[in-house]
Image (cartoon, rainbow, N blue to C red; front, side):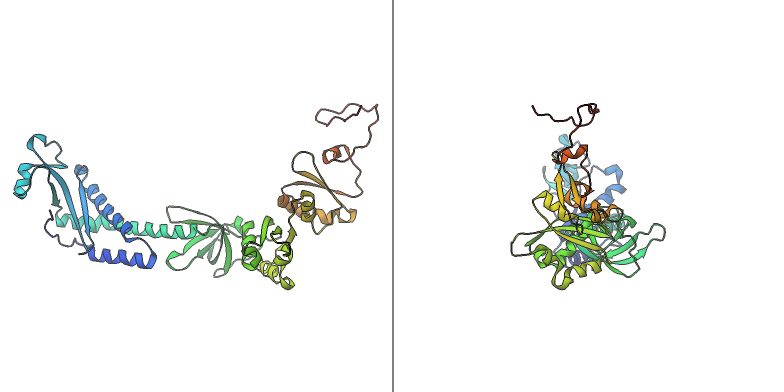
Length: 398
């Protein structure tokens, strides 16, 4: 049965609510049906909060989209006097007949909530919950938008720099689908100056839910930033002809990147460098002068390791019999070049290849541990004492 038409509750115009939901769907893509459910739930929750003594009542809010109306009822089932045990959800036949002679046992009666009461609830508690629901839906939309951009590059505008810890607040995205992101000091390139209003590219590491909306974790130091920049600049990487196999980076100083081509007639290093070095130069400019070493990846570990130690020339690479350990022999005059300033070249090569690298000059005399790398050990006199615990025993042949 349809009850009497209720007047609009004070402080809340159902027609305006329906219009706002349609606008949200058109402009922001938030489904109207989902938001309408939140509106109904908000009003119901507010009524139950104000009527704790009747929490067990079956409260129903009906939305008439055609006439742009909202109505609240207490729904009860008509039962025989003998079966009447639940006053919150049941109504005796006598009480139902007092409302309408047409009611019979088993009928459902919708008792309209007093319009003044409904208006007070909607305008007070309910309205605020509805607004919160709209905000949450909007945040969810923003979360979905940025969650799809994980491990991608976005351009942000520096809006504020915290003088206490150096963290920079960035505005990323445009319009309703923009959000604030925090570039922590540890994710900034050392020595890179940031100023308010500056546009910078950042790498989206992760997107998380938080009480204040989506939390976008961004970085300028992540190796993925270099990889994505090359995808933007090098068509062969973007279309998959050239593949980035490994990256090792010390942000602001140097990056080593191993590339490989699926086609024999495509030079992976040349594709990344570009005509007259234009492609790699554009990336170096974006990274504020960070040096980039591009090497060719190889299935042969020894060949790959030798290339990773560039610009030093490697005479020989000896792989350990067990584990990812190797020894590289370089010309005496290139030892410091292979190791690099403060060990950076060797450190990046080790991270790039996933091998522990021991660098020795060509004049190095083989020691007792060289048998680990497949090299012959010098003969040991018979009178020498037995090796101590932890040392590899000598191999003997009969």
